[in-house]
Image (tube, rainbow, N blue to C red; front, side, top):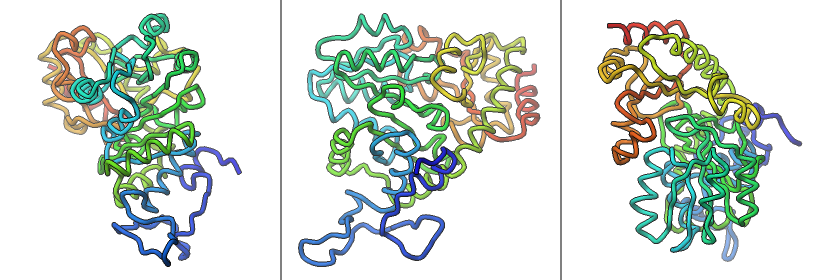
Length: 382
């Protein structure tokens, strides 16, 4: 039976594994490193938790069902997932990547993957002509964030997906910002969907996790082999925390988006705010594309203020909103990308992209909107 999204957050596709017969409602935490064999040559299906664990498997089944993928593989962090994914490529392979990416992704590309023989080019993936121009005979993947972190640029996934298929390369989409609740890249042509499960999937700022959702079983088995070999699988307790978080994903995403829409509109009216980057604003250049390919706008807002002093004052004076690096949790967080998420990016590149001393990024939580506005109002005042 094909369940609706909210039901899938609780039950996935209701694929019952014979791992428990107690009737427990909360899926158990199988806190074990190893499993006994019933007899010589026989297995329960679980041998060693590095290879697979029932709690992690349950999480993978649910996330695969939410994204419409063949399989999902869970990792100890989002960066562990990226690292494993890059291992499917060979030295000399070329990757095209969005030129406005999370700083940690750029760091692993530039300092690990290039060292290991991969070629990476950063392009404007929301300009389909630029993508066409930069494709090379050895291009094996196009890596896209949409919306991007932190400038909220939107890429037309269907167009890029068609282009990837024509050139026999993979389309990889980081879907962390919108989550599977608002966007499903596989349905738009993606081969791989990446999530930092730490963010909206977990939703409570209490654990690290990463997930890769694969469109085909063949690709999934390659990733599973890499995960088993390198040992980056998500532990049982962390898997359970993400499972628990996903149960409320629809409710949280709706509440956070509702607050973000109001806050973005409020920020646009503040004299000290010069630019607001939120894909839910009709003035955003990617507004129509995002409406075409997603069911919502999420709760991530970036904005430029008038001067550095204003930015520092806001960060120092917020009381309810917390100055912290992460995003996607129920608590509202404000981030200074140039010092935090994108600190390792060379200054000239940051400046070119607008990631400067005037840019702040806001992850809107589920607090009362009047309290959030009051907090920003007092922080932005002289």
